[in-house]
Length: 422
Image (tube, rainbow, N blue to C red; front, top):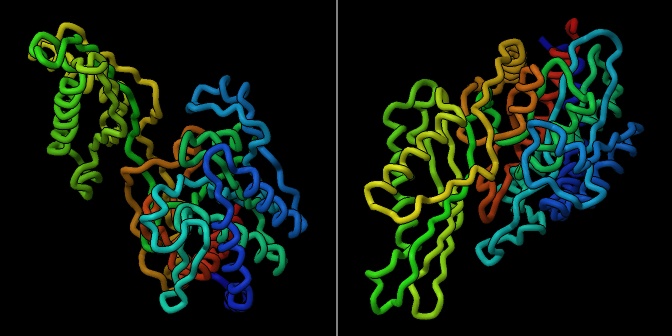
């Protein structure tokens, strides 16, 4: 149980600092930090860390290093000067250490006409206490909370026996290579919390597998006036994609716990489809890109076999002159689970102390950098940054009432986790 004096001191500081932190949150949203355009936000976060008397350590996204790491995902960017950032608050003794991981990158805003609030304005609805903007929930809120945590520790001179290590990473929304590079550079800990993707009553300890791939269909050209003489690649790939989609969705009928909480953890989405014939000619080439999610017990190998078998059956049944080509050339990640009972116990105890709802621990059909911590043998949970909606969609927003609650909660976790023996 936390000491009342600590709770009072932290609560008072949070209340006094919240207006300033919200302004910083707006500044973060106003920095578009899409893939390969993250330099400005890295500089902003580094300045904030330096202003607290800490040294930001830059972890370079070095193409040659990434190409040598077996778990690196493509695309591997050649843009220079791209860095993830680490800040370490040293412990005073041999206590348990903890990583707090957030990501600086965002997805594109999309069609700005579909937004009722400009995506990079950081508008606040004062009546509802809601902030709008691309990344407001995913994950500029996490970054803002992490910076507020660093400030609270430094300004209140809080000390813990174990280190608290803050990761501000790139490429969560694309490759996940930022967290992998931070761990490869030695910035690990006894456990990790990823401040991304959940509300205050939920935490994630397991992810479905993810697989992106391309299918190419080679048809046969013919004049449109005698199209029956050719093989229309556009029509063939449309029917083939529906067959693959049906075979994947059919797997949902046999889903197992804990994945029964989702109606369809097996998903297949056609992200892109292209085909164009010459003038007055049946198109003879079509290409599609697909993205799938799949829970265990399936693996990358077994789910690839399902796709390949479906394509083979379709080829035979439709007597195609050329077998479609499958290229496993996109994002690929196995299902991952991170056992973390000790961390769960601490989080639930802190939530109870603070009168928060019980934290439900469960799986997610999404993905995150959890897989890198699991591969490194570091127990990891996703938790926070609090209530928000529409990540990756128009009018993404975050409820500011949760901000101070999350800062106070995390200070309680640091106090409980890091003050026990490592």
